Image (cartoon, rainbow, N blue to C red; front, side, top):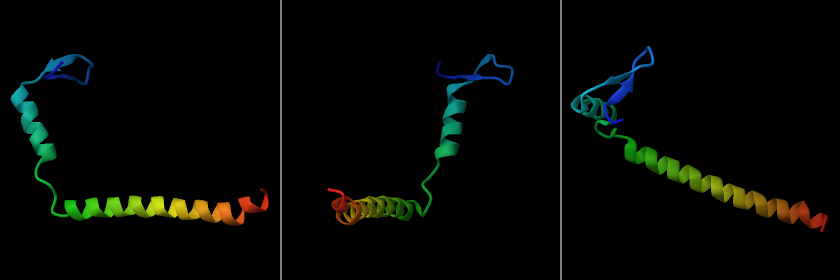
Length: 69
């Protein structure tokens, strides 16, 4: 179904592949200048989140669960 899209009425309308390629290029375009910084921020945030879960798990195991075991 490459090259086909749905119209507002729900019927399938064929569009030229070159038009779809231009549309994809317009959407993707060049990377934003802050993309590398944003990627590092996301990776650091995930790492800090995982480290926080590990520390929280150890604290709960040490101070809460040890009293019931």
